[in-house]
Image (cartoon, rainbow, N blue to C red; front, top):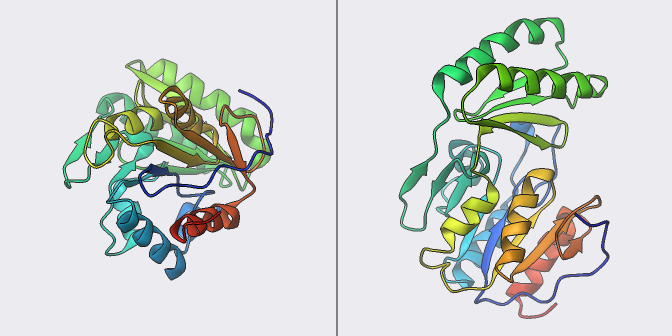
Length: 250
């Protein structure tokens, strides 16, 4: 990874394939995932970009697909949820990489007494992953990471940790936002296009790395170490950049 870069991304082209993170990229991060509100301006922006690009727009999020659908309403886009563990392609087909159910249940049961002792911690069961949030208890960050590391190892199976902003997740190994991008790029309408990935968190680094490998455009939102080639300052800057692309200018 490299340090913060000030380089603004080049003007986007309608022939590109757009892969977009959601929280922290298209939407401001809320205290809790359920507190996020989607405005009509964003829905219109994404819908117009989807139309302009011939459908080559996919949202790639740590949220589940069902959660994304609830946020987007009637919008029907390709969606990759839970860091690529579930993926809906442009044809509407659903692809799932399932976690070992016994291991997941064992971890969830072990976390129950921990949550009782520390009400500032929040466990989110997304179906295929378990996310332990500590945004309301930042002093427990190191403890949360040690705990989830130990539980992952004790559960066995092909599991791995995914770090994020005030969250640590246990998920099946070998599947991430980068693999989701790679899968989309083998399918229409993404195949053969110049890929661009925009994200803000540690879990987006897999997407940046895959897009870099493909010779595409990787854009980090905000500060911090990243392998992304370009930077945008925040959610508002991302929306402006995408909006300017729709107008054919930068």
